[in-house]
Image 1 (cartoon, rainbow, N blue to C red):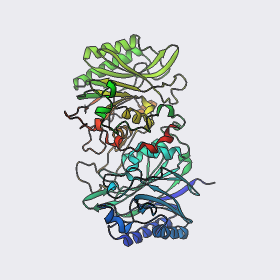
Image 2 (image 1 turned 90 degrees about the vertical axis):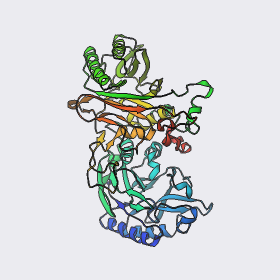
Image 3 (image 1 turned 90 degrees about the horizontal axis):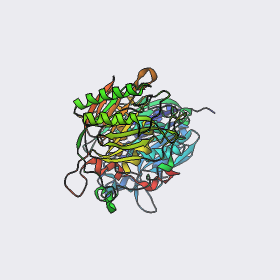
Length: 572
């Protein structure tokens, strides 16, 4: 059976109050895509009506049940053209009279399935209830297809649910705004779930809101395989579903490597209550006071010589100190080297020397090492300061380079410091969105990630500028997508990522310190794009003197807006 399939994304600007015009224009664009051979055609969120509705009363004349007149109209077109079509529309449930922002998959036989947007965006609660049908994957003659609507994809859990459900393709329909597209979150969700993502986004201006366009088809490796920058249009491309079914991220079988037993917090709501109160309940681990701090990351190629590595760590620590850094993060196994590492105990001479370096320069240091304890070996990282070892973390998600020597860790590393609450992950852990999420749910302000990651962590996007104003980026950017920027923003944490730089061995560096707000421009970040060295950025974990959180790293807006009752399958 062939696994190749031609798909299309439709970009369209609907007009409010002109539903018939919108339907006719969508029919024309879908027909254009079908005539080009597309068998799966995806159209934008709320494409039948427009988006920016004031309230239930205003949208009421335009809502419909599913199935209903609009779905029947597109089912007739699907029969005629032999294709499947995804439509975005406001739905009314006849049993409850509740309205939903819905995506519906329509085939030649009619409605295949509906997804009601589960995570509403800022204005939608004025008229729309949160979706109540979970996150289904629909079996079709074309493959296994999932639907998500706009804000859903901000949350790591939604795409992961359908990925675990076997989705070959996520059809993501949106009214995306406020950033250059194709958006980094779209790319991240395709990459981390190793599936195709067909993105249909509207463009244009509606009630002062500027929408971003950038509709596209994204491959399982994050490559943009087809894109429309702005204006109405259709982009078609042939895809191969076997690429998705391999389920590999950065060359690794990430679904097989998941550790659900460590993800038990995912269905919880630790930020449903004021975190300044929640984390201090019963006097147990209140959040640290926090401060403004200078955090640096260093990238270099460690060798098999522990003393030489520590010499290089001290050189880079001194350079970071000269750049006003107070905390410096070094790569995975920076102390012991990557090839046939000579394991050392945390209580041994190598870590003692790391502490001496921290003491001499008045720094806190985090660095990776191959650790030996009780006859077992671990891929570990230590956080040290002049006071000694603050904490140790053992990598929980092992990659191919670990399996022949290391045992996996079985607990998360969360440590309270003067910089704020720090979480530690190592390299391949960052491929798993669950890792950063658990640390965020535990109240981390800052995640440190010593890494030795090969493969593409960043990508550029070129093309003409969309109609956005400075400071939103509009041009080509060599780091338009960076996996660690997405990890920081989706969890509202600062993230310090220190990667090995050894291009001959495939380690590409791209270390950086990333800010907690995805949509803050200019971004609070610093990236070391090339060469060995250090780069420094300021982090802020303070809070105004109020009973409630005023800093996004303490408030964690995206974590607060999660709907965890949907997430139970993630721990199965």
